[in-house]
Length: 289
Image (cartoon, rainbow, N blue to C red; front, side):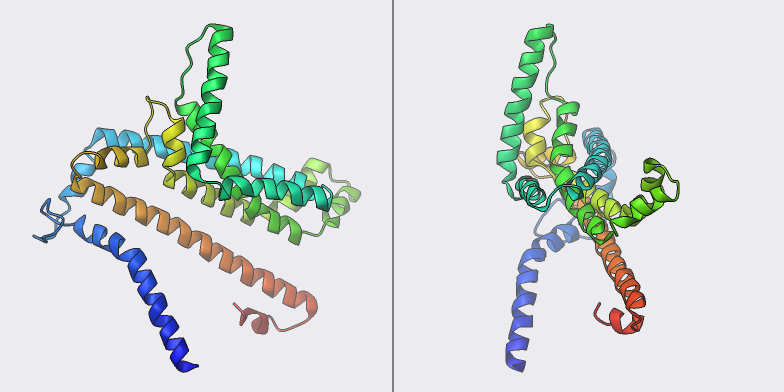
């Protein structure tokens, strides 16, 4: 058994080394003074300085940040309302719709991107023909696409919190004289807020990280950071890409760490709460986590 355990750890370490070694090499050479990607000539921050002086990259970063924040905010609202609606449905109908909700997450990005591009082209063509306008794909279509693929992640983050919620709390608050809106704001919303925050962070991360769907729905007038990186790699690769990729990796990694820490704390708090309700020792329940 010990030999199998050691072999499993070695194998797992090799897998992670294979996955992350290229990223670590990229991060190291983002501080290389030379343009060479094979020879280390000294530590320098000049590629980061040049990165922040590149107007195209800064504009793309602003677009990415704006789209990600707006998409995450709208997706959080839509996802939360959808999750509330699903919880009020019959179990069979809810399971069917949850399966439909999983399709955008399991579907290939290129299929989603192409299908949404065809939808936007057809819709804009019909609007232009009817109203005599000249609308084209751009920021709005890009934002709609991001909201579309962000919303399912929010739904899946909020649903577990709604399942943990006592269904009688809302009725109890209304029986005590609270309006439906007040009861939702004071009773339901605080209980599911952690799931909403996790969903919002996940949606923001997915939007920052997306390239394929953005590439097909942004049109020719708008570029995200991922699209700029792709266009730079088609020419001679500049060390600025190393610096930019390093910053993106750090941002996404930080968000993922925050999500995991939040989920861990929520699991411990839930275990402690359940232990108190059962009259057991909270410390014995927390040992499982």
